[in-house]
Structures are given as structure tokens and as C-alpha cells.
Amino acid sequence: MKFHSVLGLLSLCVGASLAQAEDLSFSYPVTESLDAAIMQSLNQAVSALDPNSTAKLKVQDAGAAFSQASLQGTMLSVSYDSDKLSKVLDEQRSVQWSGLSEPVLIWLYDTSSNYFVSDSNPNQVAPLLAGEANTNHYRLLFPVMDIDDVQLVNANTVIAAEDPNLVTASRRYDAKFYVAGTMAKNTRGLTETKLKVYDGEGRLLGAVDRSGDDPTVAHQVTTDIAQILMNNTQGSTENTAAPTLGQTLAVGPYRGFVRIAISGISNLADYRAIRSALVTYGYEASIRIVGYSPAGVIMDVATSGSAEILDGTFAHASEFTKIGDWHYQFNNSAGPVQSAWGGVGRADPMRVTSIPTSGFVKMPLPAQGTASN
Image (cartoon, rainbow, N blue to C red; front, side, top):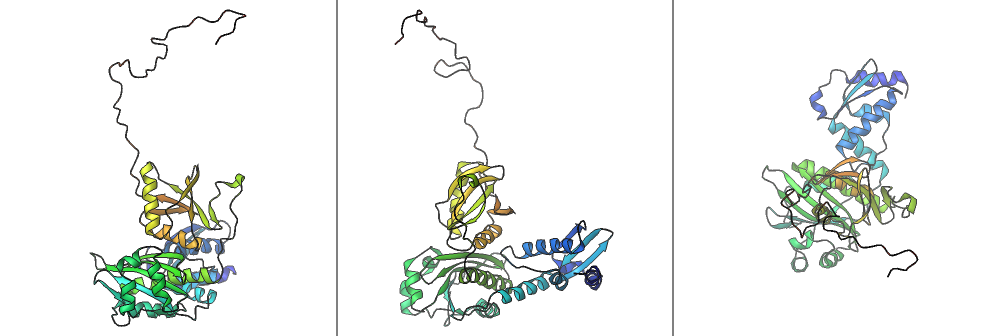
């Protein structure tokens, strides 16, 4: 983009309210070019707003999402409007993916009311989900929950991973993909959702975990589902074979698994907690530790879905904080183990001491020319 065109974008935004930006405000020195500084701010804003996004945006897209921008000397200050940026991402996503012609079945259990959201028993979130799904180029299908469905599916069915009854019940609807999980109102009145996306054979493709007001959750959940479906209908990016011996600690997606680094582990109990968290989010319990590096513990997480979905899961999960590419901080460490030994005590002849010669009997050396047994 021409320099004067960028200045034109900036001038259009001067005077806009910073309150609209919702913390999507960044400052960058213009060291290479103004375009590069703008793209840095845009990429960081997208990452903060939607860590799952794989959007490839341009400088022009930044201009459509600014709420304020200014250039003072060589320092660029930019603020983004979250609603405008979400619209840009939605438009870019719709260009990338033409959607699905077949409906996507959704088993959604409302734990606050103890019923499945269905055509015969809808709630206020159902039409929001349906409308947002249409915006993302696919259609949600709610089950009828008649006697056939009730005999196979209950709350535990949708919470458990890879339940064969859920696969059987879904085949009745001839769905190529289905979504299963729960929603509930928390103590603050916000909606919390935990969903998993499967193909028609019951293979887990990805997980969604969102909370907020009803319209926000409906938008985020259906967008996340669309991303998972897009990743699994346009071919997976994880085609790299397993690393060679010389690349053992190289993190990133590989065929059938993702190699990640986790910092903040200081206790053997932390591994159990991490494994439990992964199972909660729909991944296998058999994580494999392959090594250690200054970045942290290197682990392999098996997944048949997209690596980007796993990355988004870690970025949104309360147990972890994303601190780099395929690098996460574990937030719930049990802390270092404290030794039960309180220090130096009285001498004890039964305890190994720091003076190994104490009480040691010297044995005579064998005479030269003789063999010792």
C-alpha cells in the first residue's frame, strides 16, 4: 500500500473513541515501513480477539477495523473496534469456505434446566445458534428427542468422549457431522458452553469452550464449529511426518499428533492434572513426554483433528496461557515438592553420612605378583 494511502486510513480514524477498542490497542515503532507496523498491530489484534483464526488479512483490512489510529514521529498507535474486526474476520472466512450443504446435528444439554435443546423443547439460545450458523454457511439440526433418542442419549452421553450410543443415535439423522455438549448459566448469569465436534463415525474433530452473554456465545461457538468443519472438509494441514532424531524437540503439528512445550511444571502431580485437563477438552489421556528444553517440557498430544483447534483449546482453557507458538504456561501447578527432612540432626550410625571414611576398615593391598580374588 502507498504511504499516502496509509496516512489516509489513519486520518479517517482520528478523534474516534478509544472506549470502543476493548483493549485492542497497540503501539509499534515504524522501523521498516508503516505497512509492516500496521500488520503487526493487526495480527496481534486478531490473535487477541480470536486465537483460532487462520485468517490472512491485508493492510486494507486494518483500515476497515480501526477505531483510532495516529502516527507521531516514528511511533504508530492503533486501536481496533472488536465488532468491526469480527466482521472483517467473518467476511474473510466466508470467502475461504463455501460451507456445508448437509445439516450439522447438535446434541445440546441445558444443565440449568435439565433438558436437551430440541425442536420440541427449544430455549432462547437455540434461534441465536441457528442464525449464527447460517451466517457461517452451515445449518444446525436439533434432535426431536422422542423415545428412540431418549433411550440412547442422556446428559452423561454427551459429556463422555466417543460414546457408541451417541454415534448410533446420530446415524438416525444421517448427519456427516454432529456436535455434543452442555450449556449452563453461571452465578453471574452468563452462558457457559462446552462442546465437542465429531464426524459421522464418532471421531473427535475438535472442542469448543466459550462463555459470555447469549448473543456473544452463539457467535463464538458457531464460528469455532465452522473453523473445525472447514479444517476437516478442506484437508488437514498436519501432513508432516514424525520428526527425525535430530529434530526431536521441534514443536509443531505432525501427522497424527501435535508436539507442544509446556512451562510451569514443577511437580509430578502436574502431569496428572495436565492429562486430566486434556481429557476434559476431548483429547486422549495418553500424552507422551519426549524431552525437555529451556522452553519447558516437550509433549506429544495425539489428535485426529486440526492442530489449530488444539492451539485454540489451549489458548482459551483456564488451565493454560499461550506464551508462544505451540508453547503454553501451565497455570495450576501444585508447586515444588517440599522435603520431609528438616535439616541436619543428631548423628545416627545407621544413616549415610558425608564422611564416607568414618568407620571404614582399610584392607591390605595384595602383594605384587599375586592375584586378588
